[in-house]
Length: 220
Image (tube, rainbow, N blue to C red; front, side, top):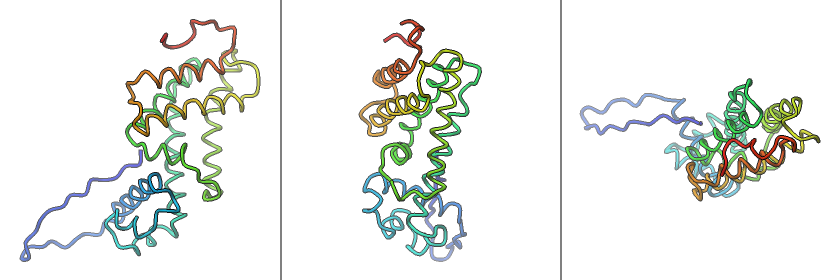
């Protein structure tokens, strides 16, 4: 998750006012968090740099000491979010069955949707289109490819149905995104029965047909 440090504010008297130390990292983190929240609530085009600066409690010019433009800020946030999602895919135990690996990924992403809904909304639920630069588009492709690798491994041992891996990847992602959408928008909690039903449906849509009905991780 994009981490922001908690900034401590202490009240001082005129006779003992400490000099404020520069904290470039903390300032950057506040700008990132402010922009992320605004981009996923107001929308990118409706979020202005004065609004971002005000939310981060800095002068507007401070933004340009850390980022070249509002679009650069968006892309930096997007790539950081995608890198985190990729790491959660890569952490799925490689020695387990495909269904279990995908369950691990979906559960980790859902947990993130509950803890940091804005991050999930930015990557999966916000239309960014031409706002993404080439590095961000490459990151998006890499995220999809990491999920494809898990599904391809399952197909190679007969756990995933015959057909194009790219299609099954899209099917699985679309269904899992539904669960993250509901969770990020506080319609479902992580403990709600809905997410697991979606995860089971996502697996059922791509699993090899000869596995039998007892193959799901959880019987609903």
